[in-house]
Length: 456
Image (tube, one colour):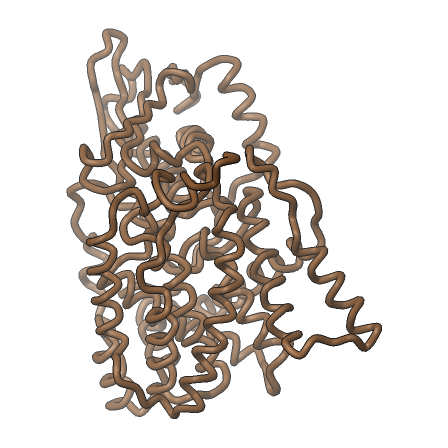
């Protein structure tokens, strides 16, 4: 099962697989090293980034995230002032303190190695951490995989005991199983996910977390809509969300409203989130950072433009979205480095479409249909960030993904959920398409817009 606690994570931009994942992996390695018998003899740390992490790592702040993880910082709780002070000190002294009595050498200029061979590692986002003694011999090492959405896996690891011993009332692994289990129990898809959550945690804790995720998403939209300036990086991209929302509101005051006004607001909402992500601010992976704007934008659309919107509807939105995101995660991928942007913005669109139908009280068949439509029309989408930055075309893609999600929800509900292609068929197609896709179109910045944008 992919829990709502797993799929939605509070972290920092610009990338879940290239920023959040590496920071978590570095922190996990640090913790394991501290607990090992080798820590007393450790003299130096070396980290090697393979494949996609090497090609687009600097644009995605993988280097910075790795330093911070080695320093003991975590994405969900990081303090910007403390982290900035740590980085200044690291670059000045080339030292990291593991314990009060143990300090090791780590020179960012030489001890973070970028290996650009995309075929040497078992996963496109692989990180090798090593602790060396004073003679340069490896004392302790771990290989971590950042598999998308902030999920990390220790190479060779198996499921932990806690995961194996939890008994779920609805152990679905596909769209067909999800529909059948919900039908047999005569409950909604949102309730299926909720019952699985309640098998693991108290209701109060589950509801509080869902409400927290909704609140962080909402505040991220607001920050993006009120912040101006230029995004970091060599592209010199200027923020647009505040300008977009200001002009829309000005047109309303002049009674000069566009026929597609709601969709223009949705675009502004999505762009606001992804500009925040590009700036390295706090966002929610949904299911990734690069696609973090789709779900919040559609959820804001539900709150502002749909009659009868409620807190309960918002919770159903996120629960149903969890079911769909989990099915993609279990049966394919949510990593742009594995399957291209269809696994990021495509999955986010599918999740948001399903969530909107659930919030509006649609049937389970309509939820599954909306999810299928959302992905069907993102199949084959490449991940080709210009300059390795999560800006062009990523920010605008979230706006289009959000609008497609709303359209998918509308088509599914007006069609009463009747359709030819199933969600499971489109999940299989997405996985197969990703496998066939050239690596240069999978978050390496070696193809597509990344090489055809000549100014970069």
